[in-house]
Length: 453
Image (cartoon, rainbow, N blue to C red; front, side, top):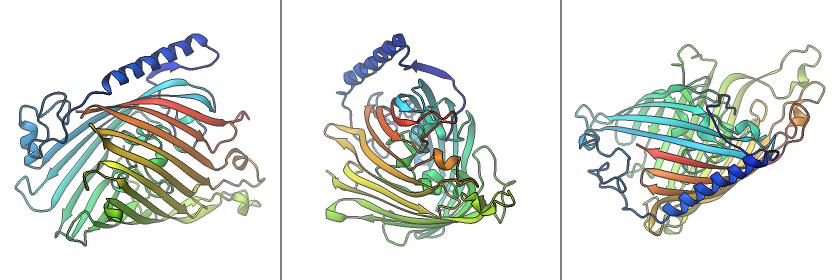
C-alpha cells in the first residue's frame, strides 16, 4: 500500500545527521515523560446508558460532551453522531528500504446512524452514512513490506489525501431473525470481525495484518456497492450471526460505484460468526469465503511466452478463519480482560498475491484501575505468490515471504483521548529495491493519538 502526499515532516532520523538524531531522542523523551505523567490518571467506568455523553471533561465518553443535552436527546431518538480523529507520528528507525524521516499522518471519521424505530417511524430500520478523510504522509513505502505498518493512513483511499463517503447504506430487519442491507458498504467495518484485533488502525493494532485478513483485499474492495442477507438464528442476536452478500469487485470510496457496476465484476461473500463460552469465558469463532467472477492478470506469465500477451485468470477465491478467546475475564461479556486471537487465510494464489496467511497474538483491555487501556502483541506470516515473468526473473527475485511483529500499549488519558506507543519489526516481502540495494528487516517506532469528539 502506498501513501504519496506529505503534509508535515516531524523528525529526521537519518544516522548521517547526528544533530537531528539528538533532536529525535529529545522529542521521544518528552513524549515518554508526558506519558508517564498521565499514566496514573484514573477515571470513572462506563457512562450511564440513558446519558451516554454526559459528565465532566475527564469522565465523559467524548470530548465535546452532550451539547447541552441535545446529543443525549438525539441518541434516545435513534440519531447518533460519532466523530474521531487519529494522528500518527512514525519512523523507520532501522533497516527497511532506507532509514527514513519521521512522518506525520492523520485521519478523521464521522459516522451518522439513524434508527427508524427510535425515531418513531417503523421497526427494524437503520440508515448509516460515513464520511472519512486523511491528510499527511506515512512510512509504509519505506519498510519493504506488503502489509502497511500504518493502516490508519490507508483509508479512505490508498496514496491520496482526500475526503470521501465510503458508506451510505440501509439495513432493514424483516423479523428479529432475518434482515437485509443495501447500498455503498464499508466492508472493513463489517467483515472479518475480531474482538481483540480488528479495525482501520485507529485503535488496537496499527499493522494491516492484524486488522483484516489480507487474502480478502483483491476481491472485496474497501468501499463498494452491494447487498446482502443477515440471519440471526438464535434468540440472542449476538450469539450467532450469518451473512451472505453480493458486492461489486470494483469500488472506490470517492465514487458512487454505479458506473463500474457490471455482472462480470461481482464477488459473492459468505460469513458466519459464533460466540463461544469455552472454560466459562467469552470468545468467538468466524469462518468465511469469497468468490469473484472478475478477470485478473495471472501471476504466472510463462503461459503466453510465444505471443508476448499478458495471461489472465478468470475468477479468484479465498477462505478465511479467525478466533478470539478470553482466558482472563473479570466480568463475562464486559469486553474487558486478556485473551488470544488468531487468523488464517488461503486463496487461489494465481490471481491473488496473498496466497496463505496466518497471525497469532495476545491482547487485552481494562486491567485494574485503568478500564479503558488496551494492549497487544502479535506475529504474522504471509506466503506471497510471486509474479513469474517469461524469463523467470524480475519480480520473482524481488519478493519473498513476509513476516512481522507488533507490540502496542494504548494509554487512556481520558475516556476520549488515547496515546499509543507502537513498535513493529517487519521482514518485508521485498528483498531489493529497484536500484538493486538490499532491503533488510525494518524496525518501525511511532506514536498514535486518537481523540473522540
